[in-house]
Image (cartoon, rainbow, N blue to C red; front, side, top):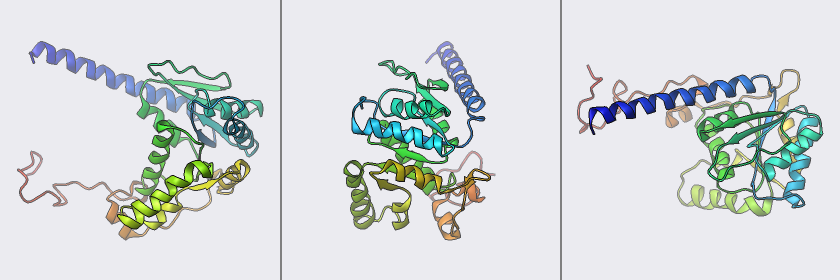
Length: 265
């Protein structure tokens, strides 16, 4: 690659960083005043009249009645339904929209509307300003957000918050795979990881499960779980528990056959 082309590439990458930063700034400024909120996920392909759509409308309304704002991806389907219920109840109804090749259209039931180009910036907003997740049946996007939350909680990157999946028929198979394959057959997760989420068919139960985890006087989660030091050492994470990230050189974690690091003194 010529020096000229390298300069052009570097310039484009630099401006992309500014665009990323601007999305974070816009998101933080808009979301800071939203207050206690719950994020609702689910398929964009569900239509009005579908049982899950009607449940999501009810979910949005019940969350507002419990004092929560409702955050969704801002699109159609379950997102529209949850925003619709929150909007009708007179609450804060947030839509974190994303630019997609097939032009996702923002639903009309949003009191706070943001638009993102980058999925990862949008995902930060879903988690950072939520005190809980309600996951209705959905596709790859719903699974992405569900696993993102599980990963952040399991690795101690964020304080645990309640995650409720609506629909036993849809979610039970995944939960069984967690237990039989990931846990019992391969041992790739801990038994306690199965308690990071719960499944129900009852939307009222789902909302109450989240609401019961909060101290209404301060709008904070009631308890911070005790984290064993051995677990923090094992994960090499534990950011919220005051565990510093490991440095492979200074901590002596490099492979003995690895070449010398440029940072090594």
